[in-house]
Length: 351
Image (cartoon, rainbow, N blue to C red):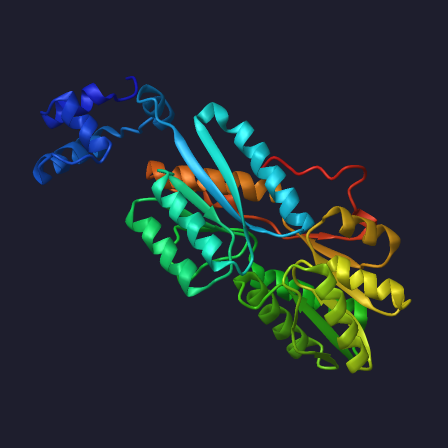
């Protein structure tokens, strides 16, 4: 027996093909009792809808907006390139992606970007932004309009977003804590922790995970108060230098976000590369160079290509009303050392 079709559903449910189409596409105008009959027929027949064929027949197109911070971060540049690559690869699925950058801290520009997304008829939005009440409220407005919303890289757990695409940042911070304790030794010693901003959920989670491991497993090490660099490597360099001037006995620096350029600038200028353990995030061109030169000990990486493709797939699944494949969309934490550094240009896997 062949696969069940919409004709079979119509026959078993005793309704027209048009009614079946309305029910399968969740359109209004069908009585609840009729909806139940169609759904029962679908279940009884074991009908599995071919969404690709249905969307092609309806000439369905998907328009997604990716909203990113506008910073000089090398990782964000890599991410933008990965989004463009994902868009090109998914064009056959009738999917279009538009990327917008908004300056960090510019609330007016951020609000304007959200308003434009509202009015331009996008089907879904992937957002990388600090966790603030305004962002939470704007996500709620998008959801009220039926727009799929994915938080990307840094989560928005208090919002109505549909899904988070990124590494487990609490686990990433814990991983950094274990590596710092192993590399820096049992102490006594102090650890500098630098973040972009504690308004970002990924920074908060990484700091919490890091502190938990250091406090419980390496009590001889002391984590200093967080220094914030706001994605500005000159500011990171300045506050790192001030921190080193104000504290003796520093044995390690954990760069939980952007800012590695500023930190390594100070470390090299002061000749501290052989005395400090430095752990950072994201395998950018600068991070690769610092690993090769022995200035940085470990990079905890997240695959930008996987994140871009996953965000697009999750948004499409939300639009189609199908389950997300959890194993496919799980972003792995990668530990990169000088000894296992990929040779030549860094190639992202195609997960």
